[in-house]
Image 1 (tube, helix red, strand yellow):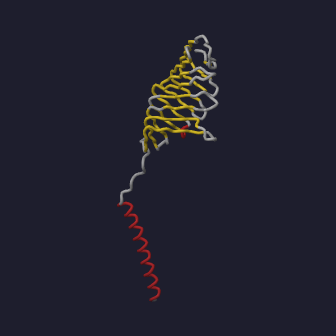
Image 2 (image 1 turned 60 degrees about the vertical axis):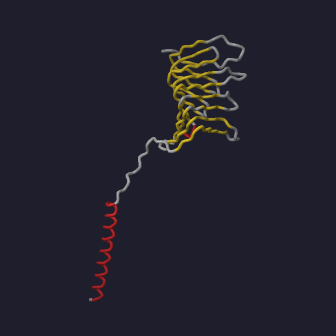
Image 3 (image 1 turned 135 degrees about the vertical axis):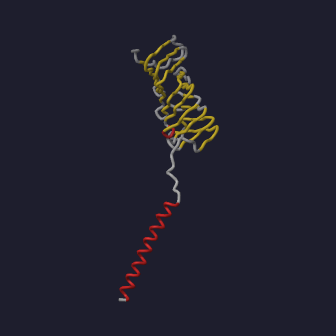
Length: 205
């Protein structure tokens, strides 16, 4: 009888301890304020001034250079904002290019740069190509593909020739400029320098 009573008493103590522990844990969770999950907002978490970023090919040769007055990183989408950007295309197998604007955003680990505000893409002249200016309020640069484009009104100037329209697509590898619609073209007589490849455009509707 005494042994049975001891066993029952021990079980009651264990049940009491378990219930007491559960109550204490529940009370602690309700009593202590738990911070709500953090919200991801588009706020910069780091920055640098007067920066230079270089991208190289598999052999270590620099093929792209980006510099600017201010660079800010945003962790919510892993993007960067740049003040007064200057983007150089330095591939050996295509003409050198320089893109400038008042601001820019960098996405996809630097593969896509959106130049905004007085955006200009300048293809420098060389022995085989006349200079080309491609101007718009926004120009998207696909760095790996060496392609630049815009869906906005744009102007392309090469020598004394001028082309304007809504939407332009320039491939620096092939030196081909496509103008999508509503184009006005002023073609000047060719000079002694070899002219760039003729631009393609869709006829006006």
